Length: 226
Image 1 (tube, rainbow, N blue to C red):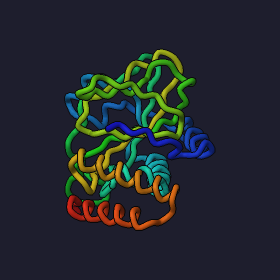
Image 2 (image 1 turned 180 degrees about the horizontal axis):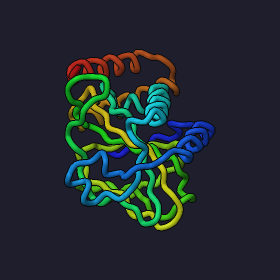
Image 3 (image 1 turned 180 degrees about the vertical axis):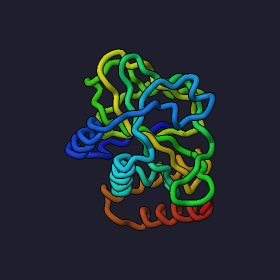
Image 4 (image 1 turned 90 degrees about the horizontal axis):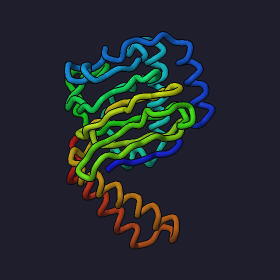
């Protein structure tokens, strides 16, 4: 499942973040990938160890924490600290697969990458090309969202960023280890939760919404790995 979550960041937050990023130095994006990715990656990134990057990442994490749709869809257990990239002048990232595990800042061990996320920081009119293209069993799906919007998709998917032929595409990307590892179960829980919320908004709290909420939490209890 690919999920578009609007307005993770508000427009004023995007403007403030972009202003800080525009004045920062950028490095070769291949600094954070392995051999396979380095062969097809041509873009720039903020230094992941820079104080600015960590400050911007904290702002993104705070925005994610206030968004109930994101929590419902991802059921995040741990999140890799967000990184920031830029594409221009035919820069691209060819089809690749994200690593199954990554190191986790400020904690020993590894994080399993269940979900990948791209938070768009440039509006579609700011650049040409630059679509995030995700390939699954149903074909290829191109994504180009308004600034502040996020797309969430399985980290197991092959994906690419097509060449930016005009303007600049700036974004944020990160990975999530979910409390529920299996994608199908996670999707069922999300759809059940959204149905409960819709019924509650339409009818208020009833015996039926209470019963569905009970089933939701019992399934979550059964499938959660924490």
